[in-house]
Image (tube, rainbow, N blue to C red; front, side, top):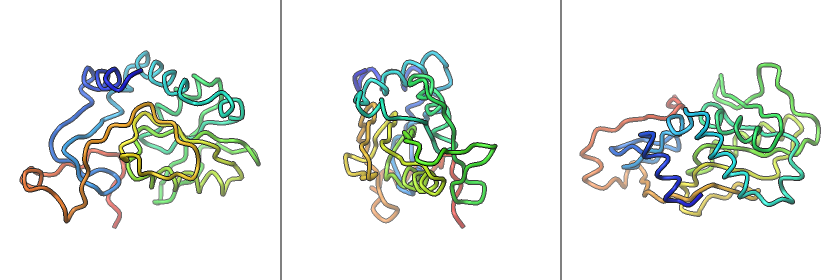
Length: 195
């Protein structure tokens, strides 16, 4: 899929939002990609996962034992990537602020893991989820995502295979443009503010 085709999927599902958003990374943007909306249609979610799977080189795919995604954003696309790759898909979650395995999930010692996210901006959630996988005995060998919003700056320490790179500008709190600062901020992501 081309970037235009992926953006068309986001637009047709009303998942490309405009306004003033505080992203889970803490940065601000005039655009937000609501992946839950683009993934709410099972056929579309499957199609997007297959397109991501096509981006992963065969030599990497052949090593994958397990797909892991961080909750909440990575749940649906992680599950669909498991289906596309014919691998089990589990998730890590943060009931107390730190990623952990729950629900009886386990990672076999030495399992080769594909980490799957919806959107990567700074890579913080991915790196934290990878720490959890390593602590449980797994080895993250690559990451895949629907969207790379990092403007090519993210370093996850493993090969990264996003479906598309969409470079809407993001801003730190103290560098907001006047027109964006004038719009009330919305925090649409799944992660709550740290106290």
